[in-house]
Each structure stands twice: as structure tokens, then as C-alpha cells.
Amino acid sequence: MIITPEGSHNTIPGVPWCADNGCYTLGDRFNPDKYKRFLDRKWNDDVLFATAPDVVGDAKATLERSESWFDELSSRGYPPALVAQDGVENMMDEIPWDQIRAWFIGGSTAWKESADAADCATEALKRGCHLHMGRVNSFRRLRLAAAIRCDTVDGNFLAFGPTVNLPKLLKWMNFIDLQPTFDWVE
Image (cartoon, rainbow, N blue to C red; front, side):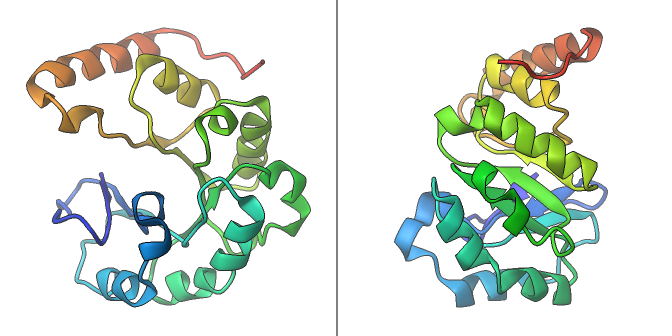
């Protein structure tokens, strides 16, 4: 389960969850103080990671914006996640690998589905990061996430028509579980 400062969700004991900063939907309206207050709420201990603030589609701006947040998240008890954005493949030597515990595949759809994104994900896995992909709302995208060995995914597929979409999602997941997964190739 993924929760944001803009949502009204609570965590559920025993259900792994992550905290997302909401920059994807908020853009320039992201409020750092509101995110800090959100992170300071009394949550359960099943947290996987919390995302450092990012800039959608811009790896350089994301790294600059996120830099001071890794310690901020750690000091609050959250494993820090870097939201990977378009162009991060050209900055892999600048990533503060010792400060991040999760790699959140964000960015544009084209980048998210690229071989560059898959290569970056492989590097993050080699470095022991939890691997997550955002905006996974189709069978095709779920298969891609499985192929690059994502640990978790998120999307709003269930929010729209959960009665109809939950059986579909469970069927997709069962199919993926039964099929061999091959490494990503473009």
C-alpha cells in the first residue's frame, strides 16, 4: 500500500506500505513542511521506504531536490527512496548509494519502459535497494515490472472499479507467478 500526504489512508498492521511525497500529482504545489508533518504521524512499523521529493521527468533536478532529504528521512526512521527520473542513467556515478535503500522507478512512460530504466534498476538491485515501479496499471506494465525484478509496484487500477478490477489483477498476478521471468531486453 502506498500513502501520500494528500490521501486520507491509514496503514494496516501487517500490511507493508510506503510513503510517497506526492510530487507527481502536486508538482510545484509540493509542501515540504506538510510532508514532514505527514512523516511524523504515528504509523505502524511495516514501512518499506519513503520517497525523497522529486521533479517528474528530470533526474538532475530530482537529485538536487532529494539530496538533503535522505538524512531527513533516515532520522525519522524511514528507509530513503530515490525516485529515478528520465536521464538518471547518465548520472549513476553521482547517486549517493550509501544513503538510499530503495529505487523508485518514476519518470515519463517512455523512460520507465526503456532499457536505460531497466539497466538502472539492475544496478540498484546489485546495490541492495528495494525496487519499486510507480504507475503500474496494466498487465503489460506489470509484466515489465516483474521482468526487471521489481519488489513492489503501485497504481490506481483498483481505485476505479475494484469489484471488476480486483479479479483481473489477481489473474494477472497469478499468470506472472506461473510464467518464467526473463531478464529485460529491448
